[in-house]
Image (cartoon, rainbow, N blue to C red):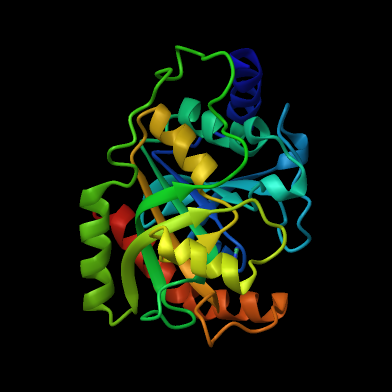
Amino acid sequence: MLEKIQEAVDFIKSKTNLEPDYGVILGTGLGGLVDEILVSDEIDYKDIPHFPLSTVEFHSGKLIFGLLAGKPVVTMKGRFHYYEGYSMKEVTFPIRVMKLLGIKKLFVSNAAGTLNPDYELSDLMILNDHINLLPENPLVGKNIDELGDRFPDMSEPYDRTLIKKALSVAKENSIAAHEGVYVAVSGPNLETPAEYKYLRIIGADAVGMSTVPEVLVARQMEVPVFAISVMTDYGVPGKIEKIQIEKIIAAAMKAEPGMTKIIMELIASD
Ligand code: HPA
């Protein structure tokens, strides 16, 4: 696998001179941050050796290199989900590539259902922990010792300093943001009312179908992570509605300026 990662890295380096310090993954309906990037290069996933292809139609699937708040970033516009049929190794391949490209921190966004009755639609939740209910783990298999430990520590999955800073940026800018626990499930179906209740009881504030695999791999490589969810639908008893993907995207887009502001400020002041 190390060779495949290196081939992807070599290809990318032949296409851009930008050396990113930060990696950013944009979730469903959250592509707007790209407009803030002074873009130097764009590389389609389909051109990168060993990269999986993005199949979700509203994801255009490319790596965008440029300056965000004056700092060099690589942004994944479109991510890979387990429910699309990719293996966990495929889902997390780009994280390995970003690390070898030199990123020092990873920023992740996603759309999630809220389990916490105090959260409203389009509120943001800054992840301070997660619960992994995905049926596969990207770290299973022969360990590549050059990339990290066999038994990686997860005592601080999300960087506490970044969480603190993000909460103060949110407060200063009157952005509705909470701190909470994300639970990852495989999807693609949404949860039944009993499942939402169960996820709440086991300690989660929001549920989604992404992020955790990428975080596990980043943390194995000792990359500090910041992750943020936008609440796009209710998994709270009495508030659960029939799901409409358009509504999810609309709720995410409404929260996009706040999310963009937080990530930009964190990178600008880093
Ligand atoms: N459940 C799982 N994943 C999701 C949800 C949800 O309610 N909303 C957005 N992604």
